[in-house]
Amino acid sequence: MANTFSDLKLNNWIVRQCHAMGIRQPTPIQVNCIPHILSGGDCIGCAKTGSGKTLAFALPILQKLCEDPYGIFAIILTPTRELAFQISDTFSAIGKAINLRQSVIVGGMDMVAQGQELARRPHVVIATPGRLADHLESCDTFSLRRIKFLVLDEADRLLSGAFDEQLETIFGILPKQKQTLLFSATMTEALDTVKQVATNQVLLWEAEAEVATVDQLEQFYVLCPVAVKDGYLVETIRTYLAEHSNPSIMIFTDTCKNCQLLSITLNEVGFENVALHGMIPQKERLASLARFKSNMVRILIATDVASRGLDIPAVELVINHDLPSSATSYVHRVGRTARAGRSGTAISLVTPHDIQLLQAIEQTINTKLSEFSVSGKEVAKIFTQVSVTKREAEIKLDHNDFEERKKINKRKKLILEGKDPDEEEIRVLEEKKQQRKQSRHLYKKKLKQRKKEIKQFVQENVGIPNVLNR
Image (cartoon, rainbow, N blue to C red; front, side, top):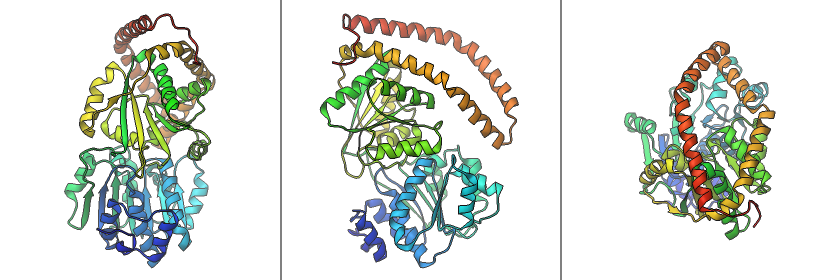
């Protein structure tokens, strides 16, 4: 097994750049994939988050580029904008020695400026499928017919079906003669299908691991009633902060609105944070991420837009405010901590309705989560204030027309898809009307159950004043 980057037949200038970044020894995925890619083969690589997948394709691409430099040489596709910028940073750090020209093509940025960048034929284009497909359909100032490399990073997500239309547009223009590299943290059915139809020239490398999460990660759950979940979140943070000095914390939630609500609520109760979700303009998203990465703010609240690939080595704690619906999503979320050999902690808030989901996740990752001790009496002290603060946050969001902005974004998307937004709105309203009738009875039942949970919780923790500070 190769012990150094030189053993992988990489050029000296690449080895020097890796050393300058503090990277001296290749990881298993780099050892196994880089020689095969340099020899001209296709590759499918699967390994845990934080295992060095980006360098596994960046280093051989840059070596091949310096042997025959021209643009556009390589296309890297990724599911999220933030991951695209992160990959760009890696290419910049290694490629500055050869004056690498690259371009990041993602949504939320000026299309005209991006079109001008593409017309200048950068060596490497890092893009989200939607925006690259938009450029291919709307202008002819650049060509992808001579590319040597196509990379799908977080390939399981890209091949899950959500990007099929855009990928079809992109793949229809690419040359047949190229190297195709697929990398992911998890092997899904989509990747398994690719694996089965792959030719003999394709290297299929998957890290051997009985457990889907890294050994340095401690995983816990907090069992709490649905109605008191936000109180338990605040107390979980306070409990962890009491034992750890100024840690970096990522909190994952399910929707853009819940993400924004939690961000406002936690800011109001004294936990300074930034939010990251799809409803925030791209420049603000990058600014929020930069503030968190530079430790100016210690808490980041995000949707799954931040769960894949983002490398923030200093994250010590990941909290799942809402348990993800699949084990794959869980693995990607908790993979934001315990990276590059560091230790980390993941805590998931679990309601009685989530028990079966938790058991399914435990079975898939082959790890039993331990219980994280949170005092119900302390939660009772802060419950009223947290609830009132969240309600005020909801009113604030209504004043800011959060739902209206979401509706506008949806209409823009429908227009780009060639659909009539008014007709679609009528159809959706009819569907919602039917769903409302069916769910009214269920809602009343849930409301009754929630009131029962609150009553039981108050009875168990009675006689405690409603103050936030201990």
